[in-house]
Image (cartoon, rainbow, N blue to C red):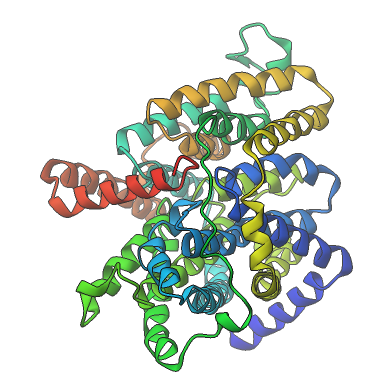
Amino acid sequence: MFASALSDLWYGFGVAFEPQNFMWCFVGVLVGNMVGVLPGMGPLATISVLLPLTFGIPPVGAILMLSGVFYGAQYGGAICSILLNLPCHPPHAVTCLDGFPLTKQGRGGAALGITVLSSFVGASWGILEMIFLAPVLVKVALEFGPTEICSLMLLGLLAGSTLAKGSPLKGIAMTLLGLFLGIVGTDVETGTERFTFGIPNLLDGIELVGLALGLFGIAEFMKSVNQYSEVNTRYSNVGLRDLRPSRDELRRSIPAMLRGTIIGSLCSLIPGTGPTIASFISYAAEKKVSKTPEKFGTGMIEGVACPEASTHSSVQGVFIPTMSLGIPGDAVMALILGALMIQGIVPGPQLIKEHPDIFWGLIASFWIGNVMLVLLNVPLIGLWVKLLMIPYKYLYPSALFFVAIGVYSTNNDMFQVGETVVVGLVGYLLLLLDFHPASILLGFVLGPRLEENFRRSLLVSRGDAMIFVERPISAFFLFLCVTLLAAQIYVRLRKPKTLAALEIAEGNAVATARPAE
C-alpha cells in the first residue's frame, strides 16, 4: 500500500509539473493570497468569479487553480490578523487574540514566521492524510451502489446544514431551498418541465455560475457597502530578519502546532465543520492544556501556532470526502465539485480510478502550492499590507463588473445576468435575516445527484423503500443521520453554557471578519 501510494504520488508530481498545470497552480495561490488579504472578498466569492474562466481551461488546470485560491487565501488572512488586528476571514479571528498583542510587543515578525511554519506543517499533514486514506476509500467505494450513495449524500446534506454556523433550522431551510432550486428545469428522465413558470430560459435549469456569483458575489458585496473603514498600518513594517522566531518561541510552538494539526485533520473529516470551527476548538484546547492559560490573549505564541496549523490542516483535509466520495465539506468544496461537473467529470467514488491525473495531480499541487506560498509570503508581506489601501470605491465596483462579464460569457445570454442579479438580491435579504446562503449551494449541487440515485434505488427495488434499511452500508449512513439529528435536538434542549459561549464567540468572529471592523 505504501509503495503504491508513493508511485501514485510520483505520477501526480509529473502531472502537476506540466508547464500549463504548474502555471495555473501558481495563478491560483497568487490570487488566493491576494484575496486573503482583502476584507470582504474571500475564497468563496473569488472562486465564484473565476468559475466561468474554467470553461476554457483543461480540467486538471482548472481544479488546481480553484484549489490554490482556496488554501492560498488562508495565508493572506493570517497576515492581516497578526499585523493589523483585522481578521479578514472568520478562521483567522482567533489568531488576532494573541497575534496582534505580539505585534505591539515588537514580535509581529516572529508571529508571522511561526504562522508560515505552522501553516506548512498543518497543510503537509492534511496532504499525507489524503494520500493514505484515498486507497482505503477507493476499496470501500467499490461496495457503493445507488442506495449507498443516496444515503451518504443525505448524511452530507444534514451535516452541512446542521453543523454549519448559526441555527440548524435555518441551515436545513437553506439546504431545502437549494434542493428546490436544483430541480428547476426539465426532468432528464421524463422530459417534464418543473417550476419553469413558462420561461423558456429556465428549461435547462438555473446555472451554477449564476447562483454562485449571485449569492457570494453580489449579495456579499451589497452587504459590505459603506462598511469599509481605514486600516491602521503603523505596526505593519516587518523585514525579513524579523520573521525569525527565537529559540524559546520555536520550542513552545512545535507542540502547539502538532496538536492543532491533529484537531484540524479530525474536524475536516466531518462535513460542515470547516476551518473556522477547527481554529476555535484548537485554540480552546491549547488554552486548556497550557500551564499558564491566564496569559492567553496577551501575546502567547502558542495562541498563533495552534489555530493556524489547525486551519490549514482542516483546509487540506476537507478535500478527502470531497474528492473521494463526492460529498462537499463546505460551500467552497461544493463550488469545486460544480467546476468538475462543468468539465463533464462526475465526482464520487470512481473519480480516483477514472481520473487519476486530477486526483493525484491535485495532491501533488498541494505541496507545490504551499511551497510557493511560503516563498510568496516571506518577501512580499509589505505588498500584501499595501493592498489594503485600495479604496473601496474602486475595489468592489470592479468586482461587480467582472461578475457580470463572467456570467454573460458562460452562454452569451443576458437572461443569466438578470438571473444572477435576482439571486443576489434574494441572497442579500437572506443575509440581513441571518440566513447564511452557503447551505443553498450545498443543496443545489448535491440535490440532482441525490434525486438520481434515489430513483435508481427505487427502480432496483421495484418501489420498495426498505432497500435503504436492508443494505448494511446504507443503513449505517441512515443511522448516522438519525444520530446527528437526535444530537442536535438534545443539545438545543439542554443548551449548555459552553455551546452558547462558542456560538457567541463564532458569531463575533464572523462579525469581526467583515470590513466594518
